Image (cartoon, rainbow, N blue to C red; front, side):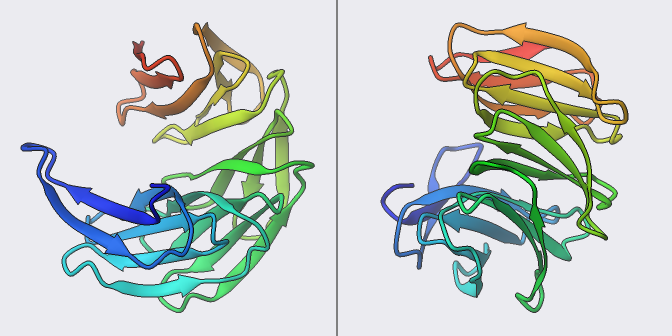
Length: 219
């Protein structure tokens, strides 16, 4: 939240479980590890923080970005964290040590969204430069750029099987991409900017949030 906190909630009851204090500016992004024990947050204070969900304690801070951290992700094996920043870069981190592993450069504007493939080999980023980029996590090499949007990419995701990329943007469209070729497989137009996207584990359902407040379920 802009109030500089994270809050943990009971999904079944809607009850607040705890509040996490530590960031010195608004919190922009949160990810939860696969086993549900840790949370990662990004902030306008240019840092990431790792939290213990059971105790609410801050485990460590990841400094290194020179501008706002806009998006964060945790690898499925819980060993690495990925961040996208308004400094136009992505950074890969060792979760256990807090050490920066590498920086990914290539976007010409702010990085607004990041995702990691389930196998941990690839990263996807969306940017204010209206593109998505696919990266090799082990080398930091840019694999390809996805062109087709006419406004900034607000949210990006990778399918569980690693075959497709999904993007939602300020041009009011959602696009499904073939991750190997960069070709557009399907497109959906909303009534306003698409602010959040995700794919179900079965790869058959897409969920998209719109700035109007609508949530779309697409097959």
